[in-house]
Image 1 (tube, rainbow, N blue to C red):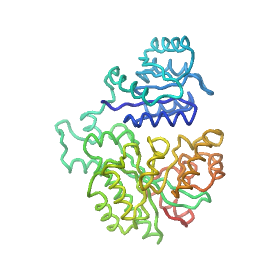
Image 2: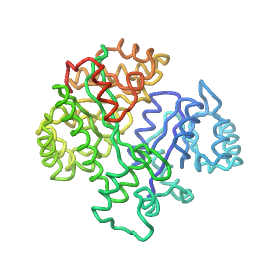
Image 3: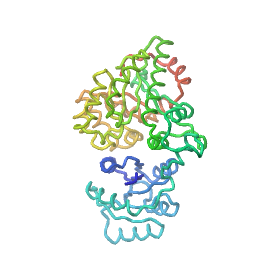
Image 4: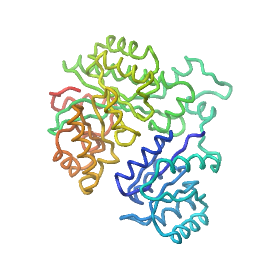
Length: 411
């Protein structure tokens, strides 16, 4: 089964979250979400076409019919799934319009959507999709890694490591308390593509995975991050807590925790200052090596964060079953919450639950003073977003930290 890319247009936060979880449960993780037509257009403009568009017909803001027409005429989607309880004649009219625009209409999912029906539609969709022009192949791997046309898989380890050192970089985004005190930073990976410029993780990580470089790249990010911690400690005399994303698949490696412990000792960074953030948590299983891997990391002193809370499948279940110490509320729920009572309710519920479970909360995507104030009114949480600071290089971070208050509470 090929990897699918899906756009969800749904202006009800709870139903949006439920749909996202249903897709994750069916191993679909490349998902764009939008609560308005304008947000959908912006997402498509920045992240490119999708295979499937799941569209709610009745929106409070914007014309979903106009967006559906654009999806077909501009080649921004191949397959359309309608999301509505509209009358049959209305649905048939919309379907005919979409077909005339060039979309393959798969069907209609009544609201609230059924996980079984969504799974059946995804399975049926696989047979209707044209080969993606952006499908990964070794030609793309060669191009991104700067290899010549005569180099072929499998890659020699030195070739992959040399490409990572040449093209990869690590940026950092501060995390602060509600009082503005620095609590730590999150490490954010970037890739300088020879032809396309700087790429974000969703653009290059699948290529590295295909090339068998996922583990090597993760160690590169961890090493660069811990090197920064050691340098900051030497320069300021204070520890800098950090959070680093890791793929859940690495938990299955027996040597991962032991090797990480050695890396922490090499840079003299206390394990409790490192938070490992996992996404795609719906893939983690409590009856597998994943659970053992998480326990090993906690036993050496590292902290664990759910990086896709409310989006990555059964996140609530994972909080109860697995040894996580923190949850991150993603921008899909935090951005714009000051003017949206439903988003506020979602964030408030997550924060309240985290408080009762004794785990920390980081609210990400804080871009306005209004959203910051809305979070602060709900209770204690740490804040991350462009209002506080944009992602920056290690060189830019050091003077930023020097101008900030010293951290008083650690990860």
